[in-house]
Image 1 (spheres, rainbow, N blue to C red):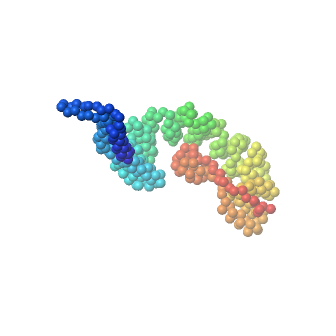
Image 2 (tube, rainbow, N blue to C red):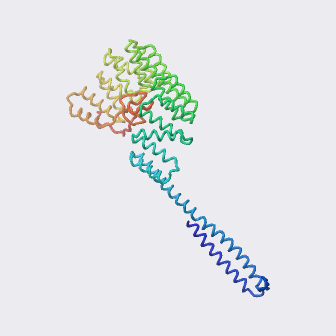
Image 3 (cartoon, helix red, strand yellow):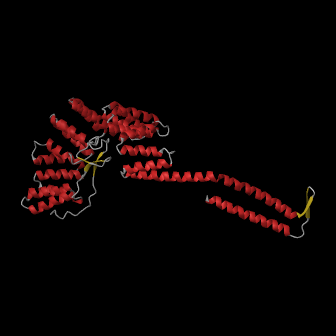
Length: 444
């Protein structure tokens, strides 16, 4: 609108300028005269004035036409500007709805979507946000209607199918999930989300061959690299091992467990369970070899209780010597010093224990303070003040690490393929907290 008024003002300036030109042309001396005849009338006029007047008339006619055209367009322009304002306001409401949804303010999100639709019902985004907000609010029937409507549109088909998959998960209608995922894969054949959901579904339904095929598809499509593909194949194989163990087929369990570790030797839990299986079946040499290989690939504090179980019949001193030999290839690893410190205290090797703890002093964790308390209790049991001090420091300190789900960020007692809290696939990892280095002045 502002530009239109500026155009009109510019037109007036042009007309005034044309009038000045006519006046100048008329009063300039020395120009010839021209007679214009109209019926019985004869008009004498200067040639310059006539020319200037003709130009002025043409200019005036041209801009008069433009002016009337502008006046004619005013209703359409006003309507368009009002529509643009409504659309802009609708977008602002939609953004507010998205923000409210992210903040967990579901009722506000639904209200903002409704306001957005009242202003501009032509956008599909309102339906998308409304469906998501209804799903998050737990109004599953209304959400299903919205997602179904989206799945019928060509532009929103995938979004609708994805919403229905999430809805069926919440409703535990697993048979429908597979059909919906197949439809979604037809719509987006290269979708990593669909393939991962299919992998998750097949594993939970114990359809291992189909799960293996999906892993291969993820690798072929470039969604995972060779190492990740090997890990996924290893996890599929480990689920097969667990399935055979539940059936009571111990030989197949052993075979699948061995295949798992060939594909991914860093799976600590698999190593420990296979070693315990060998120990239960009196295959001590196999148990020790399995522990040695696994620890070499990935040292972990969870090996300590299994080491003690394997060498339970040995004296504390022999336990220390055997484990020290097993850990020789990773002797400088922090976890090795933690394990050997525990065993040294049990064997009353005070010097060795202090040597290992001194190496651990760069990071004073809960485990290090607990070792100090154990050492002081074993060597100087009457020094209750220092023991109590170490135990208090242990309570305040951080752990060496803990199992945590990367999807729901919950702490877990142990590793598993599926998170016990959110059921996410292969999301539990060993997290090491940052510990500020300190001087261990308490060790003498």
